[in-house]
Figure (cartoon, rainbow, N blue to C red):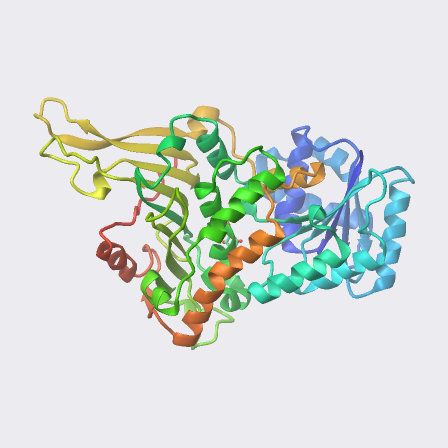
Length: 485
Ligand code: BG6
């Protein structure tokens, strides 16, 4: 069935930087279903050709060596533009007419992609509903893809869900979190559920704790206007880190399909132990990098956290007593996203030389990016040195094993949206459960102004207090920048 992708916010940065390059790459790889059409919708007046020419320029820039003029020409033949205002019902009626003409009266599915500023999500959805563009007839499917942020707290996320459900049914709604489109995050499903050796030890009996770190070397740059009202919890933890937590901690789904997968993911969030205000002070660290207050658009007295470390407990049979440490920050040592499964020490220490601390025990490090791979750390006897041991590792690296480049997350997610597979998209209850975890933290930080907002130097692993906090719990952060080959 042909598909028409309608991008709202077509003249925005996300469209030119991510969406069009991803769709072009799918075309280049022969994966974009034949007869896929792309229609841009935004207020700026462009002709089809003007929009195509602009997109060509940006796609050359973002796809670099992968840009092939003949593939682009083929691709651009199916790219169209329709100017309109999200606030104007008449523009939606004319969009509907335009789409019907384009599709030539034949059956076609549609994917409406909301790549606009979040304040336009509700009006765009309402207009699609009112113009009759949301309802499904016969085999023609209508899907709506909604970018993050999905609300700014639990109340606004619930309100947005209610609003969305007035026009679309839940099976039509694709809430995007680009972390789920990353190959290495999908590989977590494979690592855990397509191998027999990991799952039996993926429990409280063998695991001491789990660390999930998303460190960014960049600071807020020119996004301070948005970032100051969001901060690290809304920008990263509520979505990306909690997604990583769910995929790490979920039970195996009965089938690899949207609802069974999402059912298991949601159960993880529902099992996260709620925190009292006192527990929030004890179990969280917050920081702000030095220089943040001087960034353009940041009020001089801003209390926005650019770093957070949060300890979560999951009350279920698999994870009771295993802390999950989530940590993210801007202006850190390096860019790295990693999940560290820190195993326990052996119950009986046969050799005098160790392993003595949790840090010496086995560790599985899943490098989500940028040096995609997995390392397993274990003790080895140093040759010709009695029973002296040293930690060594087995190292799997995507680049070495598979060559080529890792595709952009949006490629997989756009293809899934076209094909109607919602497994890697968030469900309504999932985003609400994620907000239920973050809301009390944001509230306590704001109302109690505690724990202390520590300043940290850019280029380190956040405030030194975050290391002390871990030491007090007898643990250590795994602070290693990935080796890029
Ligand atoms: C976005 C955040 O969702 O994710 C940004 O808004 C952040 O602040 C980005 O930089 C990180 O994504 P990635 O894929 O580069 O890790």
